Length: 163
Image 1 (tube, helix red, strand yellow):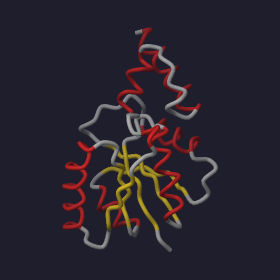
Image 2: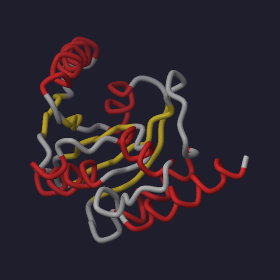
Image 3: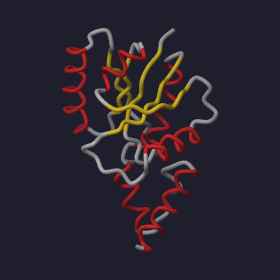
Image 4: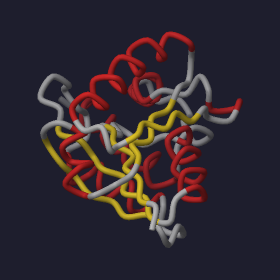
């Protein structure tokens, strides 16, 4: 059974992420989407909120499992016994960082490959940071995220604006 890991902060999960999740789920028998605890990133959404929103957004995909982790991604991948780590490449500037990370991961755990996927054209420019910015100003994000994510970000922006 071919099993892959798609790690990320997912703050929030976007249609670009969901595009990659759907396509990776067709390539692998089992896909673990893992919400990373990254101490160097300040997130808008809690880990629990990010996990919950991912679960709601991928509800129809039977071979996709949502988890969370902290630590090195490649070590988590090794622990899960996956054959591949899925990484998305939206723009050329993503490549250098992702390439270096893939080589380092291969050095640390040679039996885990990195598979790069490119999102569909309509999602290439979508990023979690842009979505959060648009939502914070009350902009319409419904074309970029799933309905549960849009509702949560609207709720969060109201909380922030009250403070």
